[in-house]
Picture (spheres, rainbow, N blue to C red):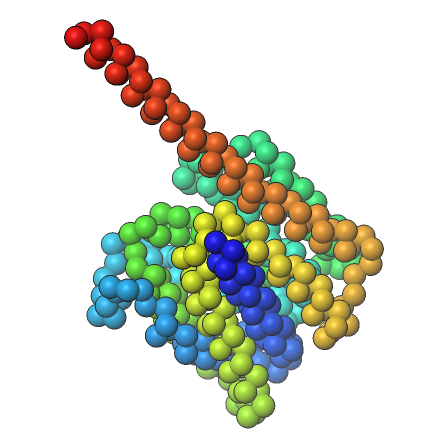
Length: 309
């Protein structure tokens, strides 16, 4: 279990380094479509290692939920494009802070679409995380631009994609989910980048190759982590990206927060981790209560059978 958590921490750290490299391109030279196309192209190096035991490549496009699979891939493509736009236009920490609104939108969509019951503690923690985002971004104190809107769009699209993933994850193959997403990313970005295509230099290609390779490795490591540790233990490691955003933003891009901004980042991380542990605790309590009721039912049954003898 511990090794799974460590692998997850490594995975999200690698993702952050990949994002930092992608951010270095800015928005002046390459379009978000071209950046995403090349990033996903190089990320395919990890695909052969993603296949689970017993899965066959010829079964990749055999879906049990074809509409949901294609819908999720389209949403993931939109989320990735929005993220790239935000990452190349606004500070690192602000991008991650707004993208981490995903749990808020996920809770809302879970209630509206899946009719799930969300405990009051989760709403309070999600609300605290939202306050942390407001503290970091501070709308009204400085101008909000297209990058901020793109980050919020990323959070909404990612939340919708995660709702679909909850429905299909038990029925669809891992390779099918990964390949379908990669195919949508390559085709849509490949077509949209043609109008403003800029021939990258060798240095640009090398940077994108490193970023794409790291992104693919991060995805592969995250799959391995989930095989070794429960989701409730993997969830909190996601928030290490907020820490990396503050560190890399300051060291590489000179994006320093004031004391209030760092306080907001701490609030986002604390509320997010507390949300994950709260969900895990509720799941454990529900499981133990079900086990208690089952045992009580067995005891009652045994007593009834004994009285009938």
